[in-house]
Length: 122
Image (cartoon, rainbow, N blue to C red; front, side, top):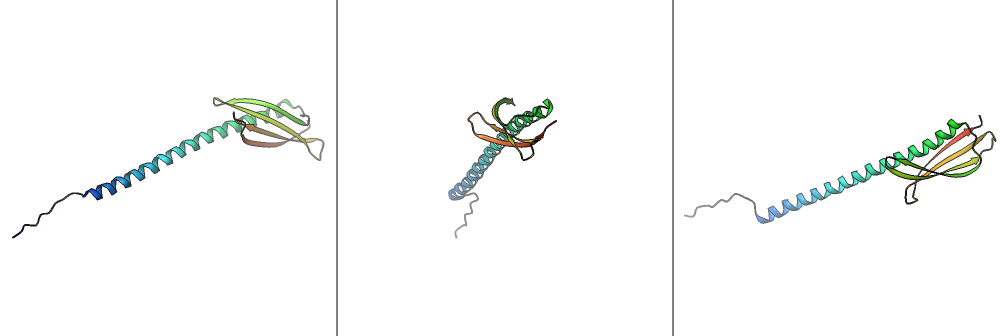
């Protein structure tokens, strides 16, 4: 009579497959967390750039000066970042109003956003 030997445990192949599944899962998690970090950085950069543009447009409104047609440059520091910007003033069909575009770029000159408004003569 032979006794049936029963062994409990995992084979080498089963262990390797389990390790492969864990490695793939961890790699996906690391990639997702990296993308999340980049997204948060981009959101912070865009928010600060928007504050710069809105500050320039608000300054025009508060000074109550009707801007002349043309372009002017400005710079802004927000959240420890430096931004370069340009205000483009264009005429409209009604001479009592002008369109003002605030364009904000990052340190490398890459355009981040543009905010437009219409200002009237006071």
